[in-house]
Length: 145
Ligand SMILES: [Zn+2]
Ligand SMILES: [Zn+2]
Image (tube, rainbow, N blue to C red; front, side, top):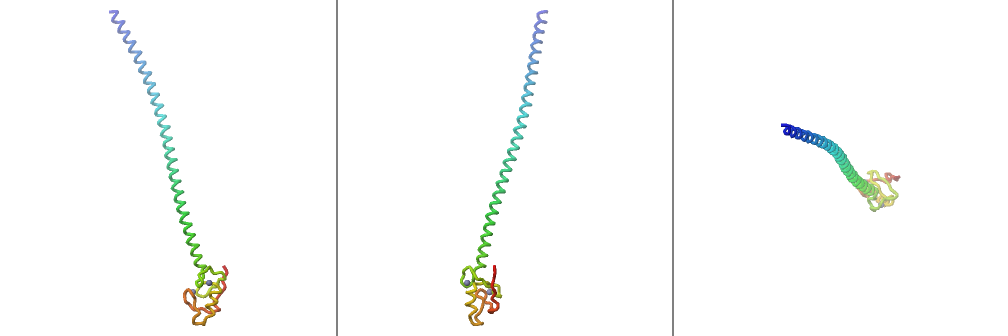
């Protein structure tokens, strides 16, 4: 009987120590889980930051692209404007860039020399080389640009 009791006590002691071990393992395990959760949180934050940075980078790149396209469009417009100015500066008679510019009543401009030769013609043939509107010598005005 006493031997049996002793064996029971031994078993109980073994069980208690095993339980203790289990508890300490569980504690270690939950500690690890807490560390893991913290790490996941940190990684999650870093991923979010990275995504934000990538998004920002992409948006910046797109903005730069749009700006570049706008610049190209603007320089095209400037070029077109320059061409138009060039055209407007052109004398309708000699097709050169008119230097001593004169303006006649219809609004067209020519070199003084070119319109002078037209103005020298008889009144009936004295018409604007561009729009054929008649003009008089008095209507030739110097143009200062
Ligand atoms: Zn001319
Ligand atoms: Zn004209």
